[in-house]
Length: 276
Image: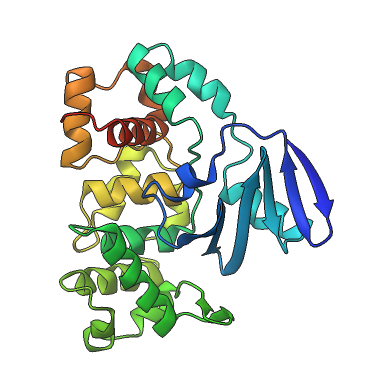
């Protein structure tokens, strides 16, 4: 990867395994939207970003090298060798096909509290409604970054609220889960950053102490917010895909990269309309 400063923009040249639409619209994050021809805008870590792709060049608009090094290089997981991971997964023919089909997906390294809260909201929900609830959460309780764009509210902010305050979100039964999670994180009963260095099973056990958080939400949080790429979130749909493609058992070559394999399987099965 080569970085070139072009006016107020930062360009990434010679970058592989990074397709914006596959990465930003695959269900791992909910604050990105396409605003032009392969141009996306979103918010992460309290910063607004517009990012686009053209002829193999990724452009981060109005971005400094400092912000790139501090936030975006890590957020887009640009230092991980996805070609190497694809090579390992390709030991299995089905995973090789899925990986070739979805090789533009990178696992976003999101702020842990935002990931936890977002996937609590995602339970038994659809993407448009998830995004609507999160938009209302940010507009009502976050800080304005630029005109009409708000940061994700902190756990401390949410913990200071009541269920009546959260009624404006129209999140239904999830409000009490959001509030319990915020209180446990704000009080440091659960210290999210410490979960990064814990074994996967131990970290999951900590997260399921939160009211309303089951294994699937815990694994999504660990994968997308805490860099546990060995986490494999399972809902009914992905369980069926694994059953159909692998007789219910994930191949050994995928275990250490289970979360990345999950994204490839999900994207491949969805886009090819696999009959599951």
